Amino acid sequence: MQTTILEVNELRTYFPIRKGILQRTAGYVKAVDGVSFRVNKGEVFGIVGESGCGKSTTGRSILQLIKPTGGEVIFEGQDVTRLNEEAMRRLRRDMQIVFQDPFASLNPRHKVSKILEEPLLVHGFGTVRERREKVAELIETVGLNASQLERYPHQFSGGQRQRIAIARALMLRPKLIIADEPVSALDVSIQSQILNLMQDLQQSFQLTYVFIAHDLSVIKHFCDRVAVMYLGQIVEMADKESLYSEPRHPYTKALLSAVPNPDPEGPRERIILEGEVPSPANMPQGCVFHTRCPMAEERCRHERPVLEQTSHNHAVACHLYASPAV
Amino acid sequence: MAQTAAKVQTVIQPPVFTNPWSEGWRSFRSNKMAMAGLFMILLFIGAAIAAPYITTFDYKEQDLMGRLQAPGAEHWFGTDDLGRDIFTRIMYGARISLWVGFSSVMGSILIGTLLGIAAGYYGRWVDMLISRGFDILLAFPGILLAIAIVAALGPSLQNALLAIAVVNVPVFGRLVRAKVLSLKNEEYVTAARALGMRNGRIIMHHILPNCLGPVIVQGTLSIATAIIEAAALGFLGLGAQPPEPEWGKMLSDSRQFIATAPWTVIFPGLSIMLTVLGFNLMGDGLRDVLDPKMKN
Image 1 (cartoon, each protein chain N blue to C red):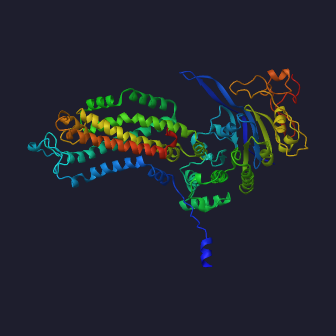
Image 2: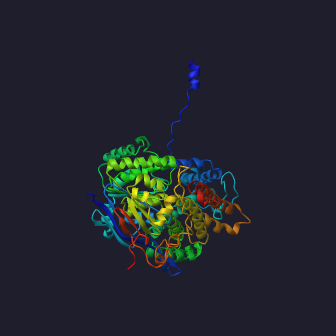
């Protein structure tokens, strides 16, 4: 029986838009608007979507790096949104994050040895010697050399820096790692190295990943289950095989059709979406996707579809698949 | 055979593990103007330290028979209206000016950085309170505010120093606040929070060290203005009191002799100019090194 490690219920993160000299709240940017999902222990859960759809905000809201406006984030049976600062601080050793840009996520003034030792230090692990040993051990684990510990981040390449960032996240032996586009800032040739490293580490450290990406082929390579986000909402969530073989939501279909096909003889059926993504400050009525959906009906303009299980391990938020309106 | 082997052998350079400071020093050294500034400052620091050893007179010693002597072998920079040796007074005056410059700016940096970090990091009402306080201080022209403070506390070197420090606090406060605001959104600060660091550690280890560049640059430039302000207060009789050999005071005491004994004004004036120029040149050089983005 699979155990749930992370459960997100109706997560909402709104950013107020302030106007005028009085800083009156004129509205909200609804970056994440009612997202729910469960992540099982040991699986890789992918979140995919285009820029600005709220996937990174979702990741950061789970870790309380951005305070969510509403909803629950239940990590191992504990609602982390209700924890006080100190309890949250202690819980952070179990849930870590790897950021997108390894050039920004490492403090340029700290040597690698300090970057890696700091998490142990702040959580009061061991003696100086024990900490050093652990740092040396982990840097080898991520494929770097202990002799490189006395260097500064700018003396490493992007891929090496991302390895350092991964090592830092692993220092505290977390159970869950939120990987916020960990490879999209890297060269394609390096991407697979980092992905393989993350896969190896998942085995040896028994990790659970929430893997955020915009690259569908990376997701396909890496994830067990995938959620597709659009404008702060999950429009489709399914097993990887099911999602890639029979996408249901029109948005997912369009996304998948945009993945380049290396076979020149292969079928090519690109669905080109019209128009722009609506502003999350001014969300459309009804289905968030209806403004661009080639199959939109009258109902889609008024009524927001909910995420519904259409088959085993496949859920979609679209009226085309839902039971008829009552 | 051995010869060819030696030729083939390539020189493998050992990897240089540089830290940001030594790299900075290397690029500072190649900046001629900055090095000239540093040289001027070192000259005056040397003068201040060595004053008792290189001067043969006492800076307070009056010699009314030998007043207003032109520069010569005995009195290198001449004597003033009370017959005191101007060279000696300039040497000792360097102590006062540098002391005022360094200590007042140190005070401003300390208080300004503290307030700036509090305002930038904690935001909200803390920011409102502190930033409006800075605005109020900046609403007055610096020297006027300094005069007001000294007038209220009574004229003395200590109070002049305090006044200059207060005037410069918002300069550093705003600088640090702006830097903290941008650093707060850096991903490595978010990463530090994600690792479970407390605010105190984030500030001390991640925010403060990355604020120091612009603060050092501004500090160097502010020493120059602090020296000018101290001289101005001295000139107005609000700073160092006689017989202290303060350069600004020396200028104001001798200004009636500017036509008959120009050396009494030229040397103190030149000293002020050179120290200020030295700090300005060095500050500009430091800015190029530490803060390339501010270059224009």
